[in-house]
Each structure stands twice: as C-alpha cells, then as structure tokens.
Length: 230
Image: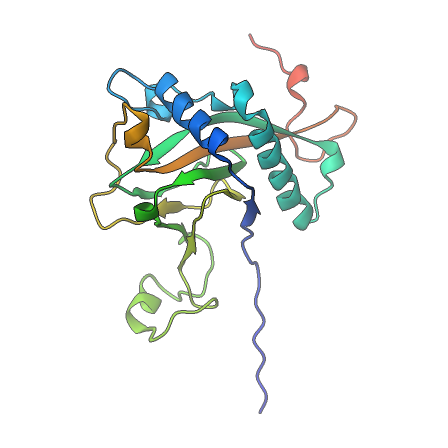
C-alpha cells in the first residue's frame, strides 16, 4: 500500500534582512533615551508608540514596509490596491528577560526589527500554533506527551534564531514570544548607552491595511482620508 502526506494551510512568516551600520545603532540608542520615562523604561505601556515618525529611521521603516508588501505578494495579494499604514511602533529592549506568549490581534500585520543584539542575548523568537484552530494535535497536549522527535509537521510551536538586521513580518493574531532562562515579561530599565549595548534591542510595530480608493468593496478598510471623526 502507498501513503502520501498532504500538508495544508501553512502559516507565512516573512524574514527581511538588512545591514545595520554603527551610525544606525547609535541613533537607536539615542532615540530610546529620548523616548523613555524618567526611570529609563520605554514601550507601548509607557506611551512611547511613535518611533516610526522619527525622521532618522525613514529608510528603516521604508524597508519594513517593503518587507510587508513582499509578505502580501507571497500570499497572492495585489499590493497595488492596498495602503500599508504603520499605526504604532515602540521599543522592546531586554537584557535579562524574555517576553511571554502574546499577540497583537487589534492589528492586521505585525513586525519585529532587531538593529542591535549583544552577543549574550541571542534568544529565539518563538511562534505558537493557535490551539483554537484545527491542527495536528488531536487533543490538547497529545503531541507534547507522545512525540519522540519534533519536526515541521508535528510542531505546535516554532523557534527562529534572531540576528542583527532581521525583520520578521507575521499575522498580528499569531501568538509569539521570546524564551529566556530568567523571569519573563518584567520591565527593564536603561538610562545610558552603555546599558543599552548589553541588550537585545527590538523595535516592534503594528500595521493596518486599507484600500487606496473607495471605488469598490473587497473586505478592506476604506482609505483613511474617507474616515470622519464624530
């Protein structure tokens, strides 16, 4: 008898790679210190969510937008009819901690960009299968307890190595996190460039997609210039 494996519904992560020079790294460090609170903390919870408006990083965010368009093109989407709006971006800088599993479901597409990683901070970016969707785990934790060897077909989460210059683009609803041997999720504080140079420096952003015009309807948000606040 002959059997054949048919794999359905893969999840796309698009990886962009760019060169990061020393001037850019120094600019990121300076931007963090400028856009942080008095304790040296900067992230979306401190209200610092507008890094994409910093003119120093215009080229960086342009490259990120291009990576997003390549992500959409791979999915067979006609990007000529779509506008890409980065609606927030913020710092996620860690020295000792990772990040717990989470998602960005309020957005359409998310990205992480790593302009600087200290050699001691080479942690893995982990993506998790949505347990509410149909997968290969026939019931919760069946595979966790019974698999002898993990591979692409049976994995319920997937770790990707991260290096300087990496841009990861993925669906905002996809759960992800960063593993660490220490306590994860706690805020960390950086008040000097010397402290930042010991970190894993990550820039996080969320994107919404709209139509470029109002001439048709195809389950896209209308252009922002068509919106009106009441």
